[in-house]
Amino acid sequence: MFDFTLPSLGADMDEGKLIEWKVKPGDTVHKGQVVAIVDTSKAAVDVEIWQDGVVHELLVEAGERIPVGTALATLLEPGEKAPPKGAPSKGARAGGKEARRAAGGAAAVGEGRPLAAAAAVHAEGARLRISPAARKRADALGVDIARLTGSGPGGAVTLADVEAAAQPGAPKAVEAIPAAHPEADRNAEMRRAIAAAMSRSKREIPHYYLVETIPMARAQRWLAQANEGRPITARLLMAVLQLKAVAAALAQYPDLNGIFRDGCFEPVQAAHIGVAISLRQGGLIAPALHDVGSKPLDQLMRELADLVKRTRAGSLRSSEMSDPTITVTNLGDQGVEAVMGVIYPPQVALVGFGRIMERPWVEDGALLALPTVVASLAADHRVSDGHRGALFLAELRERLQRPEEL
Image (cartoon, rainbow, N blue to C red; front, side):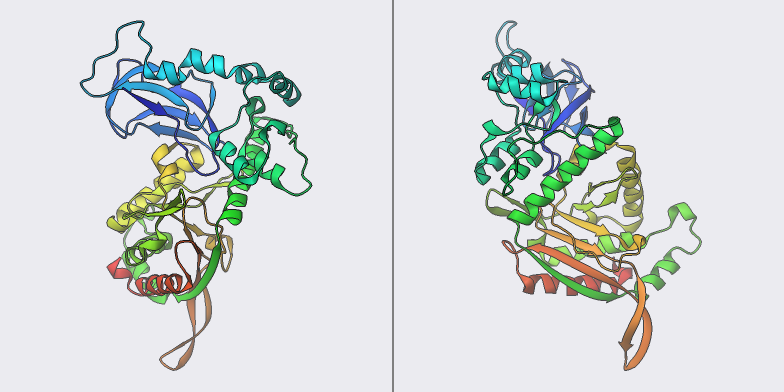
């Protein structure tokens, strides 16, 4: 028997709200199957199971908010028999409904009440609601969590509360910002989550930045030829060429592709590229396009269009939120010449593209006006240095000069 826990769907996630179960006790599930829908601060996410099994018990009910790492359900291994009725399961002993309610009375009492009421519950000695990520961050910063008043649901202490309390002269209690309507509340929650993740990134990651101006005439000509005769819905975008070129360059410089966890870099062979997608209501999400390097451009174009559509519709899968190994942000369509991004932890690099624009360029001794793009790299000095970053950008430039090979 094993527990199915709420996964972390990004560095800015402390907790989630279970919206719906897609399975029931007795159902057989397979790795990759969507078993639940969880609402984060950014989107409703389809959560996948990570191994085969049979659902034994659902430990969380729809509508409950739970911290990352909480057991959502218990499952039997393939071929395993269910324990006798009345015997406590692993999930019930460690975090079943009754156990969690008994241990987490503050959550139940504080849910839906003003922060003052939640603080009063804490003062009476009940367990403080705080996610594992926020607790770990508080320990690292020396913040006394007992003095904090959380701004999360039911008075829960979030990463943003801990980060704010760590600032010099900051008040120990963080007041909640009243929202005029649910959409405003979601936007405020998203901004707090982004702020916490980016603050952590700038505080913990020693960034270095490099830029390279890349001629794009060959790529534009090839793209125009490739799109001849295609219907508009099947045409390739320059963004797809750029993503494939990044994946190809990462194959040569794998120390920029992976995650930094528990003080060590963990390289990942496949390039699962997080694509920064702006939301219409504000904010952004960077879900993953999986294994970009192995897929043909037409397939990548279809998957990118689908990913953008589902992101803006709030229909993502948990693997798309948790798997990115590097992020690519492209603000060229917004008229920006260059992007200096902030690395999204636990990743160790981010690539940015500005808009393609004509610039003076010397080619074969002649001064020309050629289309170019500024590509930038933000990288983690704990894992790589400027020399490696420069070689990566040079490889990226060369890949974009041979678009027919992508």
